Image (tube, rainbow, N blue to C red; front, side, top):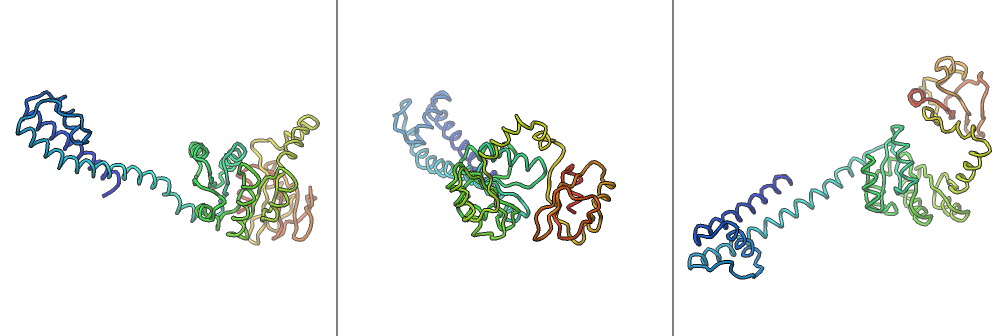
Length: 319
């Protein structure tokens, strides 16, 4: 029997028992419905308040039947009802776990504070698959309200990370409330998936060193970066605006052998896509990034292009 059906069944049984018991008192003792119902409730629950009205011999027999039969039925019904409610909640929270374990190329965000929330919303806006691991219930509830896939638990535990599908994830972003939690999260994630790309913030140089040792690929100096951006907002406001254009993204595009842009020149790309893309740089294996390459540059398999462009165009380039 399904959970909802079992809940309704035992709720109906409870109401039927109470109704029959009440009807029995009305018929036997000729009392009003309210007194009969009150007598039924205190009898079934065995609270010991005493008789509501004088009982005849038949009323006493009926009371014994209500106690023996009614209390047992109600006890079972209450147990089943609470069990059904709890199992429904557990099922609701766990129903997505198998799906998360099977997900691929998704982004796991550990934590859901203010920064983590903005990161998750940005990724979701650009149609990336996101799984949030929320340590606190209030953060988990907020993430669900934002439409995120959520797992409640500690990202420092292997089981939680596995439930989030870390073996097949594209990246982990550790954004817990303190550096120590981020370090342990990174360490646990790296142990499970040696090839995972991991990003984490650091508040000082010591934390930065420990995060690298734990296995992080990229460390963001949060306060330093924010300080630079605030300073640039004053010194170079238009440069800052360049990175705030809402309809353009900056992406890394790996060129494969069967890529539609393999073998073309940058000039040919500009002719094909117009002003919808701009090649900011090229990364060749074993070499430093070449920024603003000449339009005559030929695109080859194995290159990584740093491209600014509209999301729909960038998706075509990555096909």
